[in-house]
Image (cartoon, rainbow, N blue to C red; front, side, top):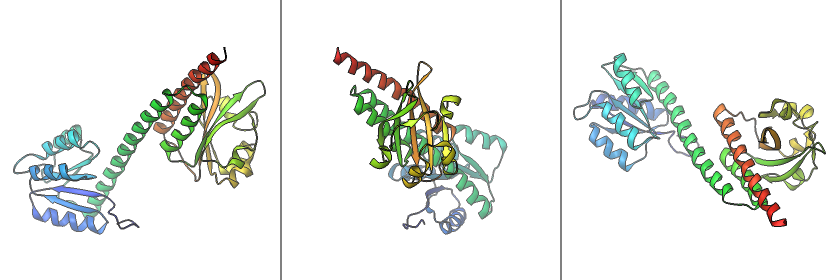
Length: 300
């Protein structure tokens, strides 16, 4: 159980041996997991239709249907639930086949408590990532539609910043417009930042995040480097910022602006997250281009 008294995860065990159910329950409940059990695949599929599970542990050899059929059913109807196959008939062929059908891992019988716990933890990591990826994909799609739905420049800017904060659950975000002739970055929009921090003034592009104009890619700055890489390092610390990720917003190979993501604690972004942020920045630039063209047409 976690601090709130909730189970670490819910697990459904499918096996026709009572001793397996008792062993798995004893080992995993001590680790804080909630365990349900079924002696037949049909009963298990019924439970899956009624309840949400994080992991399904299923035997390969079952009296009514095979564990392979259970793997297929979970993959088809519950794609965000992980499956681990365990069996006393351990062969490389069956392991490979179960993985091809969607199983996340394979545990031969007999297994030790340590082996069972380890395989569950590995499977949960994969399930958590899959669910997070799905959540981000949905949020990104919604944000993209919202941005494309407006031609009001201020509204587009606001949507870009608020969507990024929601997508990545960070402290704040801002969009800085690159004023190339003045060599400054002008704050055009922000979310999650105090008025004092937002109004600190334009940034000298040669002093703040100058690396982004040299590398042409994402740049992350940690607190330890604020003094050498930021124009207002103390203001960033006073704001409670621990790291800043800057993403270039490019139009026709020129940097139109910079999308900045502020974290309250040290935060790393994996390749998938960076790729999504770059994609989001590209969509943001297109939306900005359309909004600016609309604003210009109204002035004519």
